[in-house]
Length: 163
Image (cartoon, rainbow, N blue to C red; front, side, top):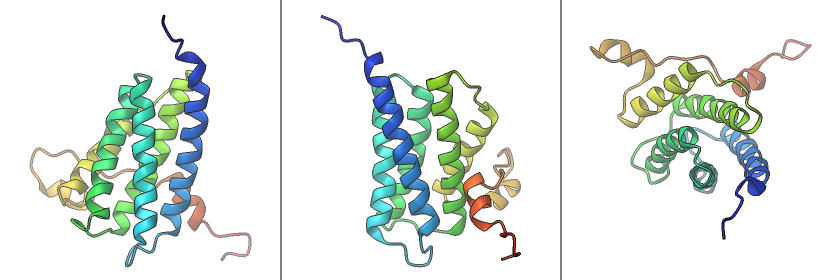
């Protein structure tokens, strides 16, 4: 007997959307100088859950990216590395790219592979303790700077009163 996995696709995409929304909310509220361990654990669990679901359905591109994200988050939550504003910015970009990848698998939307590669490189560089601006000084290492995440732009954009 074979199981038709397509019947579970919508559940995966719905749950992944919820996890990404929760991840964004937590990232935007993080106090970088004194992050709450429960929030870091919740962000890690969101990435871990998305990775597991993506692996179940054979979405290797999502699995690979969330693995890199999850590994860096794990180092931070274990205290092996201090959280920085750059981490949060890259995590938000990664959240946006994951959402794009989900749309690609769910609705056949196009996926910007350059954006995927860029955020993966940024995550890997941060895992190695290399800041994005220091990448240029490392011979043979591509620059990993990227656009500010859409969610961060929205959170910091001035309102109609200029505030």
